[in-house]
Length: 321
Ligand code: GRF
Image 1 (cartoon, rainbow, N blue to C red):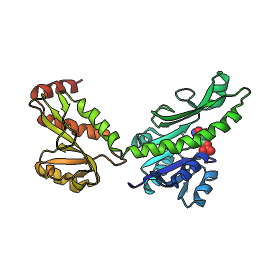
Image 2: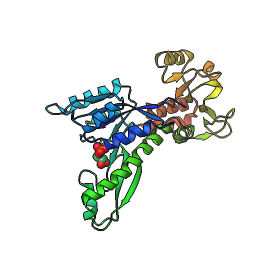
Image 3: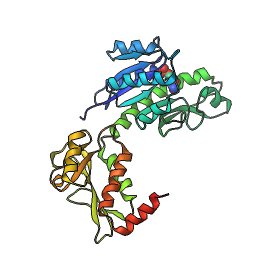
Image 4: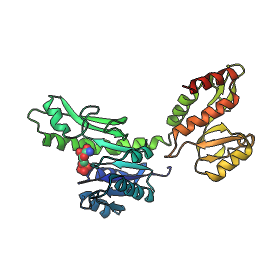
């Protein structure tokens, strides 16, 4: 099995979701492991649960501290622990934009409502008050806007007659404990799922003008220009020629450039067999910090190197707007 993704969990209180995530991680084949549990309240009960299980903990009260400084300290603790994902589980803090931005696509949160309904607080009371048939829980990606990132999974929980916010919250919590570990496991696993990675690359490659897909030696590839005379600008390699990487092959300017990239950023680039000799570099996709804007930039650059003038001119014109 591939290396497990390292996850830091941030809590503020009881930490029952943290415990659910932690115990799920101890089941065979779970694709993530908990490398840190951190809290903004040194008294948070969840800290002792984590410590008892031998998970490193970190606590720093936010009281009297500027928000940015507190965020920076929490972020440093996560990085020092080797975290590739940050998972918020009842972490009652609004985070600074910079922090959220640096963890885009790698920070998840659980919210006790069926988003987009009822962002913010008192979600159960509001669902009951509105006469909804169901409350529930959502796991979502964290973005700068509160409770507004992409929803990755939800469970609806029926509201019974005479339900109070407390009785509903208690049952929703059962659903939370089922949902969060499952969604997190699925989310981290897709980073090494060739089908998921191919789909993303394909979307980006085919979005470029005059591009089409054609298989080459058993690998998906993309060409710029007409079906008849188009030239390849990218190939998708799923652990080809003994490589452990799932990668995108794109054209660099020269062998020197390629070698320099591989030497200075070995976690991102490698020199692929055969293709490497003619300046194609392998951009590694199966890593948690894969930056998809960067992948898109490489695809465009490689496309530009072979695309017909008519197409690059159109692109230049579009780029001006
Ligand atoms: C949960 O209800 C979660 O949905 C919300 O905060 C609560 C945390 O509970 N974000 P716990 O600390 O995990 O027990």
